[in-house]
Image 1 (cartoon, rainbow, N blue to C red):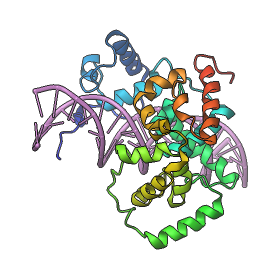
Image 2 (cartoon, helix red, strand yellow):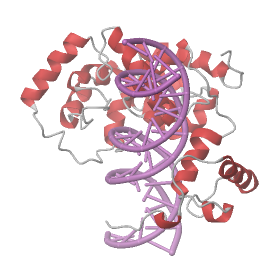
Image 3 (spheres, helix red, strand yellow):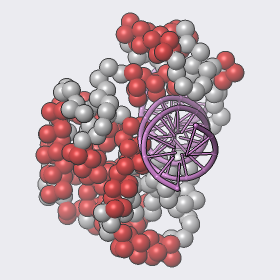
Image 4 (tube, rainbow, N blue to C red):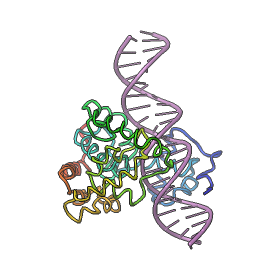
Length: 261
DNA sequence: AAGCTGAACAACCGCTCCTAG
DNA sequence: CCTAGGAGCGGTTGTTCAGCT
């Protein structure tokens, strides 16, 4: 549906933020809280789009941000989470206290992808490169372009779809043959249908009923869970997830700690 | 020393989801 | 129930910086 632009572009600044703008934004949020982003710029005396303010705050100005290099543990944790969740950067970020989705996304694209490739692992499927390549070819043959043509907004936000992605780690690693949940370069349009089927058939993989909705549940409360690692319980479904849980526990400790750097 | 290239990161854009009216 | 507005997400682009030739 048509909609009005989020801001009056003609009257908004773009590009890098100045210190003064940062100060204004920080001061305003400290005084008034995050509230309504759309009206915030005006209220704060900023010539910025609300979206831009939100992004700036969340990715850069928030006081609880960690910043600095990622630790080896975080690397591995991100890889695991990506295997489970795909390009759900916000969900991944939700499990890494002090990290933002944008930061993780960038880090993934610049470091981890390469790291995995060096290991001979396909960053998209988390499978050995050869296997991934084979599967890719098969996919190309079986499902040529139709998924690529999927609506740009395939956005895995869809609950059902998400449940599939997040619930069964295996669903990811298996169905991953048709490409996991990831979706960076080749449009994630991932073969939804195929994915669904596979994940369903893999259901047995989830040992306990709790697992039927593990991540999904997290999805809801993860935001709060992240900070304290509460999301752990929900993730203890498989060996893989168990490993993740351990990581999370450890990472949780980093939360308030100054990073070594 | 200068130019080039690639990596890293900040920010923007377009889309979907959620929800209030 | 429908519509519109706001928020959030993921992909992409633009800019800066460091290393190399």
